Image (tube, rainbow, N blue to C red):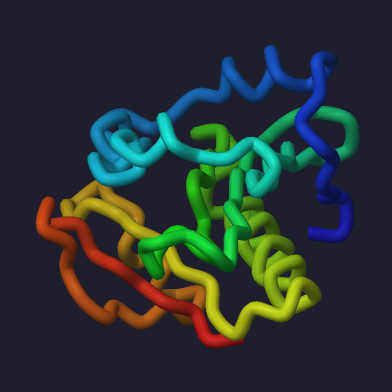
Amino acid sequence: MANLRLEELSASTALAANKLTLRRGQEQFVVPPSYAIADAYLDPTTSWPRVVLKDDKVVGFIRGNFDEDAAEEEFRSCVWRVHVSADEQGQGVGTFAVLALADEARQRGFKTLSALWEPGDDGPELFFTNIGFKVEQETQYGEKFGVLAL
């Protein structure tokens, strides 16, 4: 992970981030329903979009949200989206991105970082639980709500 770094999403990196590929079967897990619904209400001033660069190539994207006034606990300090190129999955890129987001949350005074995901064979549950997220509940849409203590 030594050659990985984060950079703010910009005009020069957005196209590459939009072209990131997925492994077959992962498409259904990109945006959980409750995030898709809440996305319309997301305050751009609380969003934290970053690309992960390996050397100078965009290999991942992470978007967090930090809004201590959010009505829903799961949206106060959360992983909104994490996406790693299919060719780079399993090499620490996603872990690097989520841990960087966790560090940012800690620096902002949050005690936890949350994530929502849909359960399923090709879903991200093992990824999140291997990092240390603990499943606390299921949403009304059947998604898992996980929390990482900071």
